[in-house]
Amino acid sequence: MFFHDCPWPPRSWPPPLRRRPLGLRAHARHAWAVIATLCAGALELLPAAVSAQPQPARDSASLEALIAVATASNPTLRAAQFRVDAMRARVGPAGLRPDPMLMVGLRDFPLSRPGFYDNFTMKMVGIRQTIPSPGKLGLDRRIASRDVDASAAALRVTMLD
Figure 1: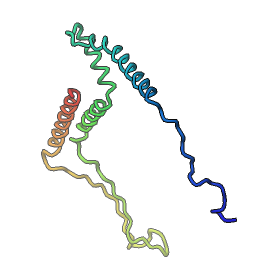
Figure 2 (figure 1 turned 30 degrees about the horizontal axis):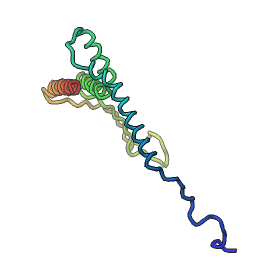
Figure 3 (figure 1 turned 45 degrees about the horizontal axis):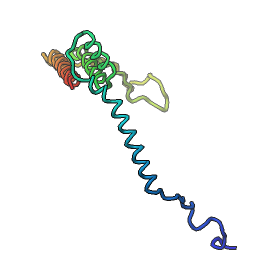
Figure 4 (figure 1 turned 135 degrees about the vertical axis):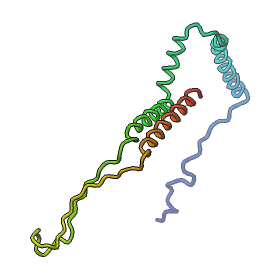
């Protein structure tokens, strides 16, 4: 018996869904139900829209509290504030000298008879310190402080947006 002789699976799989077409009256009932739902929702929103007209601010402390809550919950503002904090943290290290470097070296070490008894093995120990040109450290610090000012201005722009 070959596969094409098998009665299973049927030729059209999955079988088509057979729905009885809706009559004109059913469509009209459905349309009126949608319209009634939309009108009921609009009537519920109408008192809120009337009461939402701009009124003069009576209490500036409550306005400041609302602004503080909005600022604390907005992720864009928090990210901008973190950028300002990161720039402030860079100001201190910007004016410092680079770290000194310690060098330890070993050259021409014999592998056949390891040890430090021969005269050809060079042992090196050193310290290196980079000395920047005059005025460079102060300039780096001023650049870092200007970066703080720029990120604070960007934070203010984000807050106003």
